[in-house]
Length: 250
Length: 322
Image (cartoon, rainbow over all chains, first blue to last red; front, side):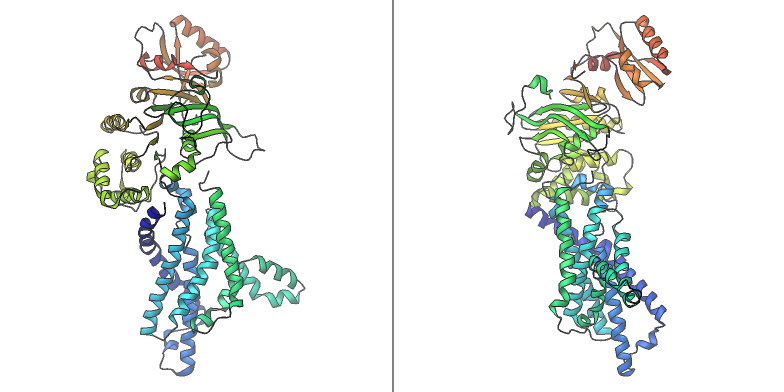
């Protein structure tokens, strides 16, 4: 069984680059352009010859780009896998083969993670040559972390529902909103409740906060990684258990 | 294929007289056990032995696809047992694989025909050196070789079903399960399918085909089980029609009151879309039956004499679980 799935890995990786890479890049570019427009950043602000301030602005712009790419690539890691197969009934033909649905989907998910890291690293290399030096291991590590957290949650939700992408966006936005308004919520006396809710939500705010450390190639405190990594791994484990129990839609 | 009643007690471990596919008192209900949802299958038993081609017939919604999904390991029975070679179907499929054509054959539309078949051959474990040859042979077998560079979404007519057949036979499997392979087939494709079924017969292979087309099933299978509303109506050898039958078969189509048909014509079989084949001993008996149907509140739409051959032989099959 392993041999058959290993032989099929090339097709899954090819599918990732053929069907998901371009949409990820386009979505990242559009979202980045939207954020930049909202903050009033123009291309002339990103001139590397403009001194320390300009270089810092360039670094922050890259970090913004990295965060958006990491979230989009993480969300796309489970796209086209379980829920799409079930809703379009591709699973019926695929899993009459002597392969395990759990291994097939898990392999597809892992390969999507690898694809995302490769895509980010190549993009960062191009950026480093053309615009401003960045830490390639840091970029790769950050995208891998987003794959574990955002991708792991997307994988779990795709096992549960066909509406996994809107649901994923909702819970990630909820976490970022709770984090953003935490001070205000504490002021009106619901701080403890908000903190409890935030522990249940995926720690997207932690991922966002870690962007600078990774992008600048600083040493990362393992304790800072524990929450997002544990949350993502837990989602992946639950997804695998659910898939084992119910590999098909019906 | 035989029913549990005439095949003796269900054996395990593939020991039951070479049985390969075996269903024993299988019921399947969808939804939670607390809800009283109707059962898609209710106490169905049969087996398909090695070397046999079995047929499942019945109208739309009778439970044929549910039954085949159970055999393919894609559903689990609510009660009873399904075994292939004595083991649970999902385990069998993951170990050996089966040739399965689902009713709604669906593959990603962007894949090209030959690419789709190559991928599925790889997943089936076809040896890399043999894959190209095997894919081309299957495409020729189903008449899709000239369309091999087309995208799946561009296929028209019965080409989807033919691609489904090609993917099912791309690897050599001992268990073949085909759900409505006759649906929408052109005359030429049907002829090709008949030839294919003949070639698929092998001493160690069990073939199970579900179709609404009882007549065609009788031509290509050894035994047929008729199911209706999830229950086995009849099962028996798919023997040719007996020209000595003195009785006549009529097709009656009702606008309403289908639930009274069996009470009035106990040997009627449903052909789907509120049409029933009824066997009567003459016009007088037919008119008596129709009068009784109308008295019970049925609304008659059509009555047409049928060419009795196929239905007579189907009706002559052993009755089960009535």
